[in-house]
Length: 269
Ligand SMILES: [Mg+2]
Image 1 (cartoon, rainbow, N blue to C red):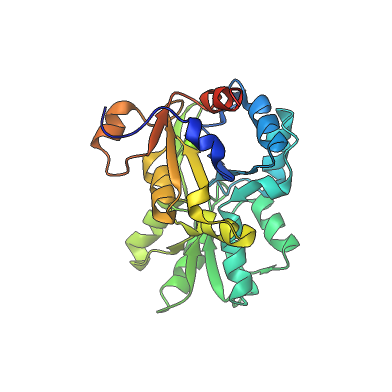
Image 2: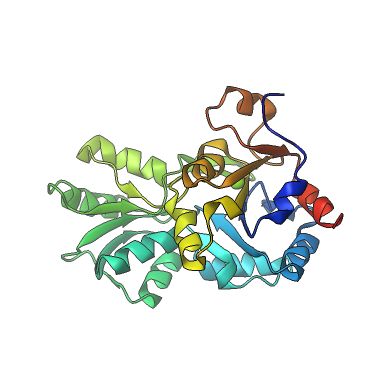
């Protein structure tokens, strides 16, 4: 097979481990084998580890609840959601009044972070995976976006989201709908934007070469890892297949069947 490697022992020497969630750690409500033991192995060896998701229809609290139902004992510090670098950007650039296209739970998170959510004279539009979107909200957003240079950002732009019943429209679909009227696309913070992992590596003061990402999607997880200069490992337990990897420009450094293979390597030490 091409020039990727499947012997991943050397990855156990990395200091920072980034994991995609859906398709990598679990599929829907089913946790992959070895995950609790893997987390224990990472903790025992004082590795930094983070779980990543673009899905901003869920708040940080929602994610903690979901992960801890699997008894993983994860804290907020182990999570990187696409709203986190987005919120970091908003704070850094002193945006206070926000028109947020987002779910009730995400709006709650933004309010807790100190933002004022409003349709009256907002300073910026933030597009998230709004599963509670109404036509009226789209109209109001459109009126603002037709003003030239009105600030417009998105947590992420996945085209579609996998569910147990098949794909559903994601934030990228909502942005595409708005694009037909306003002819503008937002600036993006989630995967495959490298900021999603680099802001964390900067906080830790650890070089990208000491980090690795495990993920099942070539055009988000693997692409981001390559953009950020970190090692990439594709798991075949989710979306990507060997055929897809062969024809993709986003080739991972390593390919494994699933995350349990990383646990096997730690067990050898
Ligand atoms: Mg995934």
